[in-house]
Amino acid sequence: MIRTALSAALALCVTASASAQTLTMMKAIDAPHYDAQRTTWGPTSDIVNMFQDTLVALDWDGRTPVPYLAKSWTVSPDGKTYVFKLRDDVSFCSGKKFTAEDVIYSFKRLKDPALKGPFAWRAGTIKELRAPDPYTVEYELEEPFSELLLQLTMFTNVIHNKESVETLGKDYGIKGADGTGPWCFDNWQPRTEIVLKRHDAYKWGPSMYKNKGPVKFEKLVIKIVPEDSSRVAAMMAGQFDITHQFPAQFIAQAKGAPMLTVTEAKPNFQLLYFGFKTTRPMVADRRVREAMSIAINRAEIAKGILLGNADPAFTVVDPDALDFDASTNGVVKEDIERAKTLLDEAGWKLGSDGIREKDGVKLQPKVYYTQAGNTPRVAEAIQGYLRRIGVQWQLQPWDSTIAPAKMAEQDYEIWSVTVPYLSAGDLMNIYFDSRNIPTPNRMNWKDAETDEWLKKGRSALTEADRTKYYGLVQQKVTREHLWIPVLNINMHQVANKKIAGARPHMIYQNTFYKGLDVTR
Image (cartoon, rainbow, N blue to C red; front, side, top):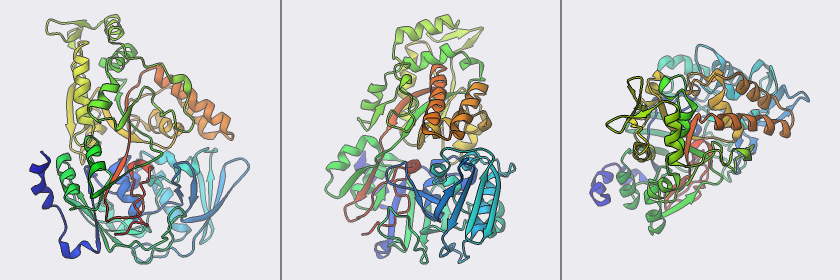
């Protein structure tokens, strides 16, 4: 299979004459656009983080915010006002000088109801933004936000150039986007490639990089290669420099290849899960949701599909993540006989064809997911397990460029993504706050108690209170079986051995992040 794909992979490479000045990368999944404020999509974030910057960056430990566009900050005793002192030596790729006005414009745009930014909550509940001088921003919140600095490292909160946004209009993030990052947006051919070029003026890299800028390559060419076998063949043949989407089933082979270096991103929190739209009658009953969750064998999936490059997930939050609630351990217990009993109790009886039915309706939930990556094989495996209890999943994969739009239509009972996150609070706020209906709260989970606990966790002034309230949310969503947690995915970066300095970063499935230390 890999040999068959080799000829196709060879055609994907850039010309040899340009290779010395060009860094080449592969991705499995493209994005519908590259406007960070209008999406939750990981395939947007990894590119955005290369050409746009945030006020603070995330250190290698995945927990510590460090200065970036903001060189320092202070926080008021009530936790409501942050004063950011900005660098005065930063410019956009267009040459425009970066100032406090760009920060204010970016966050006002993010919070504009017309934009419908799904991750706008990451910036906190902003009361007012002020610029007492060109390099100071007073960031005042309506209420304290215990993870504001951590959240400000995320791609959602990158700084935009108003002139670029207004000039490009609906084509912003499609035909171009201005940024202050180490790379500049050059061009994008959907489903084919993204080309970034060096930002020659860049010299403000965050502290975790030895090289503060500029980057060592004139161009970065990112090819979209959906086929697993083609990405494997291309890396084995030395046709690309780096990828963070190397198929998990071939990681062992990559580790044994003399021309490749495999590095695991640590820490790394990525959950592959299937979520229930609780307002759909077929999955509105908690017993039905629990039955599907406990009827699968996660260890077999981790071993058989990802060849051990993932761990079985029995909790929504990884046990190593900040503010994980240990009492959620043991709630999900795989038990096929109990699964059958739960469905019987819920009124779903086996039909003559082996599929359960109730009131003339077959238990055949529609399942949406992206057709690239690990999810298709995992979905097919789960489909097989659930047939044993009389449930027939109707699988509907979508191309990555249209998957967000199709999921937004919500014509499904179940959907799946692999979500990267920073902490328990991060994951709980992303998905379970009713303010985030319909995206990313695709469960349509509207629960006053959950909302109140999330609010108290966000506004906590002590670590103990934050941990307490985020723990209560974890307990409730686990007992309600709103998700089927399946796998905690490991993330590897595979690079040609000619490439040095490519330490993988964990932030939102990125690994490359800024790429400042990468050399050939």
